Image (cartoon, rainbow, N blue to C red):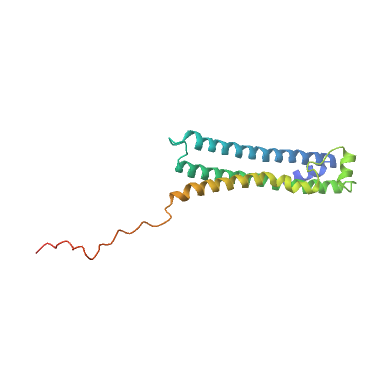
Length: 182
């Protein structure tokens, strides 16, 4: 079965291959966008839950809610970041495939491809592509950093920093209680 799919891909002309790759690029870019949007929406919901729904009488959020909310936000953002990373890896693969297809045609440069085909490449300038795929991951990293700070600020004050003081020792001057006689 895989051989049949490979033959059908080989049967396509260069324009059809490039069009297919551009559709795949659009799909992966949309997935990346959706995953980042979902991560932001869930984080906004967590913040709203912490600060609006479970506030103490003085208006400050409860420590337990901050700890649980920051852990949930951190973990969800981590998983979203991993999913975004997978989409960006696929975009990098598609870029390599597209560049390979372009060089197989009689267009030696990207500019020639854009002029002769009438299609713009989906990546912009070569130097801007790495920053374009790392930006969504950077957003996730910043959000995870914020959740880590919230967690540490909420959890560390709840942990006693010093061991409890030992009970005071009896002074020598106090008489010891009498022992019952046997």
